[in-house]
Structure formats: C-alpha cells, structure tokens
Image (cartoon, rainbow, N blue to C red):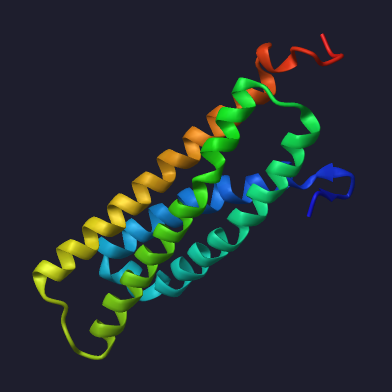
Amino acid sequence: MSTFNGLPAHVLLVHFIVVLAPLTAVLAIGCMFWPAARHRLVWLVLALAVTTAALTPMTIDAGEWLAKRKGRSPLLHAHTHLGDTMAYFAIALVAAAALIAFVHLREARGRSVKPIARWLIAAVVVIASVATTVQVYRIGDSGAKATWSKQSAVGSSTP
C-alpha cells in the first residue's frame, strides 16, 4: 500500500503504531501485575499486540516507498534505519502478551505459575513493553526531525 485517498499510507499507518504500541505496552504491564485487569483485558492485550505486529511491516513498507520518493537525507536515513527495527519490538510485544495469556489460562484452570516463572514472565513483559515504547518514541522523533528540520529541506523546492 503506497497511498490511501491521495495521502502517503505511511503517514496514516504510523499513527496506528504510535497509539497502539504504547497502549498495548501499558495494558500489558497492568495485566501482568493486576489480576483483575488480566482477567478482563488479557485477550484485548493479545489482540492489540497482534494488530500492532501486523501493521508494523505495512507501515515500514509504506515508509520505504515514501522515502524513495522524498529523496535521501542523513536524517531520513536515520529514521528509516530505526523504523526497520520496529518489527522486532512488535514481535517482542506479541511474545509478552502471549506470556500473559499463558499465566491467565493457568490461573483460569486452577493451576498456579511458580513464583520464579512469574517473575521471569513479569520481567519479559516489562522489558518488552518499555523497550517498545522507547523505540516508538525514538522512531517518531527521528521521523519528525527528518520531516521538519531544515536539513531535510536541502535540495527541495520549499523554503
């Protein structure tokens, strides 16, 4: 997908990632440490993580299409390099959500998760969630700099 209704698809898709990834991360951490939230939101968190992971490659592809048409600059190169890493973070978020679902299913069946396993799962959830949120910020910041800085306008016809 390169354009949607005349607009570059990347510009539209990126907003889904910017909202869904941090939202999923916050909900995942909440579900891990708050059993009532886990009971109510576990499947939503898993669905949001999978949706984020599915939209990420589409967003990356649309961004690469747009970058080829915009012209390369060092700032744009930095942004595309960072953007290419987002797929790994989205997959980590899916893995974290799947681990939360595992804990939920064990508890729903009356079986507990050993404390060491629970702490390891909690660590994975927190690390994946925080890392994903930080990476979304880094990618977005580099994209804003690539779009709005004067350096990116070098060679363009706009002042």
